[in-house]
Image (cartoon, rainbow, N blue to C red; front, side, top):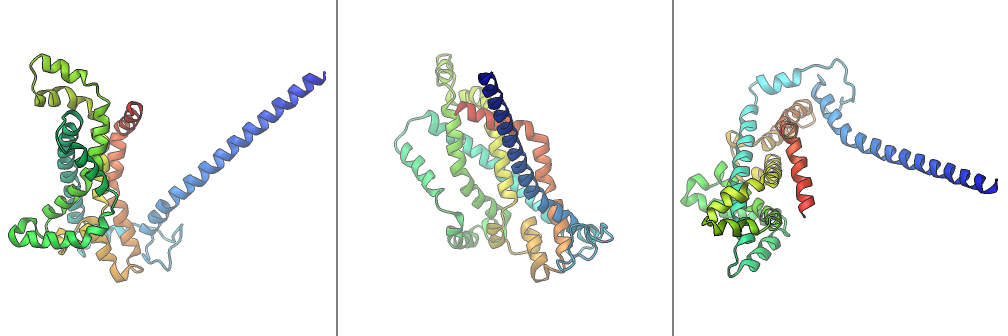
Length: 297
């Protein structure tokens, strides 16, 4: 009887510990959800607050309406759609070009052996250690001087901004892509070479289709990072017609941020829609690419 009672106490203790563990996890999950969702709810509340000021901001505003959205989209005070289009254009071009260059460079580093290979890889990794803000002044001066010779690559041009983004994005992406390529067996290359295939044919017809998961992940990460970047765009772009959405909203708010808080919140929410759509459309590919890379690594 004593042994049975001891077993019963152990089972009861185990159930209590399990329930405490589940309760603690649920509590942490609820806290994290509130922490994540509350800023979004606050922005939605601000966007439908008719007063549009920080002084009168409440989580549940009085007489909510869409006045801030009408001011944002139809008042003509600032070119919201142009700024949004600029952001989408710059992010798309940067992602596509960066992905193409990154893939070819990573393939060369992974499959070929040449003098200076290790030194170049270490240099690329070392450059990523230093934040891009450290090179802000040098980048501004360099683009300014290039613009004296090639105006289409000078200040206040999207081409110059894309060029700077490409230089900052390819470093870590080359390492990520190379790590993925290293997991693909070289037997594929050797078998194709026996059949007389060239390196370009091996890359385009055999290796490239296998890179689809990591290509999608890198492209999306590049797009999101470029779309939301502010500092470089603020320094290199000078006129309202060239502004990205982030720069345009910041300039628009300016010193009247407290009075224009509602319109600013409406612009921020509408500006987040492209990123949300990308996640909703490509969520399966994102998860698949991350887990596939984790398994291979």
